[in-house]
Amino acid sequence: MNLDKYKLGNPIDDGNNSGMVSSCCGSNYEEEVETCAECGSFDIGEKWAGDEGWTICDDCSAIEQGYDYVNVCEKCGDECEVEEEYDYEERQRENAQEMDRDGEKDEN
Image (cartoon, rainbow, N blue to C red):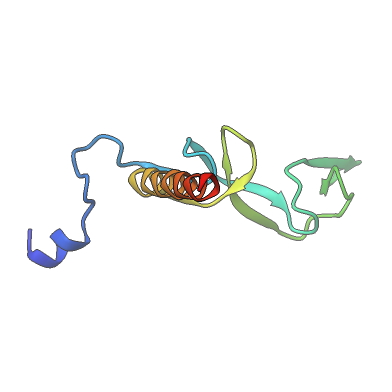
């Protein structure tokens, strides 16, 4: 491994805790879930009239011309970005430290 790849590599490259997680909860996520391009709903169904079928959003009743594909957190069910697990843990650690510092300022 050359030095450039080493510098850009995973700093915790032990094979554990180095997967991708949701940025909101740090849990598993479902990739590329179809959502309504109009309202963002996950409730998309099909309606049939004879032999013709349409894909229609169950929330806004829009006839789908296309979909948006998003990642969905399995813990909270919201749309999310994904990041490396060690980045999520580091961000959580920094947030906790900042909250501790803010708490100490309030006490003084």
